Image (cartoon, rainbow, N blue to C red; front, side, top):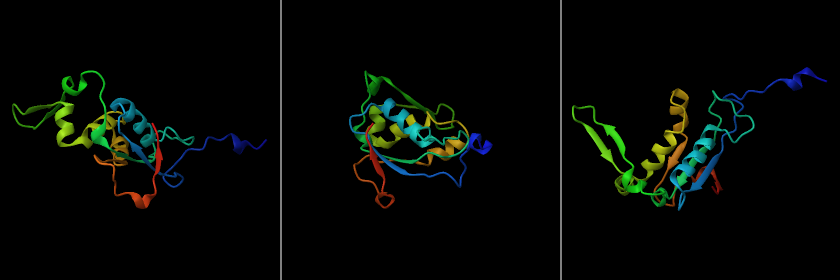
Length: 147
């Protein structure tokens, strides 16, 4: 037997094949959608997954305004941010956020499921979320997948 066949192959920037994927978020539960999207962005669905390399696909999420939340989360869940000024803590519910910026609900959920480091920030740039059914990435010929 050839001993080279037993070596573990590690992916790097030159050997990674990055594709484009479209996911329709219509009537999907937010957390279940976000976890699947995070796996695809991270590259965990590929056999040559390497933890320290951006080996995932670019993901386009359409119909972000038609996402579902279970239970009373639409009114009871709270997104907290701070302006940086004294007394500057601001609160928003998913219902308020969906009415103004529907894509941010999915972006926040996916970002929370990615690593909290340089790689995670780089991986987050592979996510493209659109509130409507149209997207400007037709030239990339993305594959549509069902979740």
